[in-house]
Length: 258
Image (cartoon, rainbow, N blue to C red; front, side):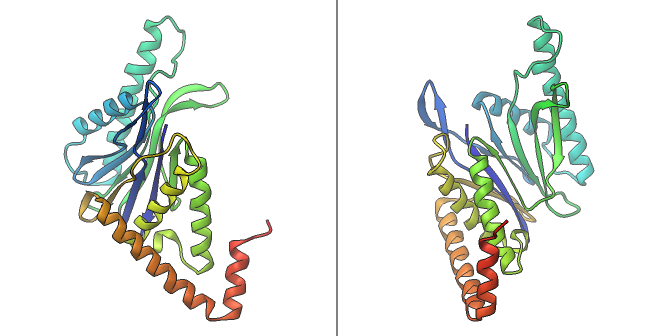
């Protein structure tokens, strides 16, 4: 599997993942963060061949920039519904099943910046929903500051929550921080998950979607952003620890009783 996370920033959205894949029990390096067009990026988890098919389908139908979020949502809904019909519903009928089975199941996080409006984040995939466990595609907007998918997503959410708690204690939200700052946080989180999840490894892949469009970050870019995060956190902590009352409040928020 994999670990993919996304963090909203003040001026954009970060997509980050590991790069480890497994083929016949052999660890390989694969791409998990993709450019769909100049303003849309996707981080995906699941079977690599299905991810490639999914990404190709998105690139084919989303070649142009989107004008509005509603346009993006309608196009994405049509794409996932078409893929579900072909690879789950129709394939199940050919195999003799009375209902749809989950043959096609990649998960993804999609960040987009339309010509008109702010950046937004969606999660999409194929799963079982409802009391009857009906196989269905889904697409929903992420309203929080972050989201994670993949085998290491539970670990990632824990570290993300801890980071969120840290900045909340200093009267900030992750979405209030600059893009470069949150790239540093994303890099730290993926590297932490690598230590805990055997299916997460390899180099960290990071892309940013903001007013300038989609951009993938080099290793040197990632290091620079990590240093920006370290310097910014040092300044914030220095400011808070200069006052005993602020220090006590900060520590209490970092280590809540319940």
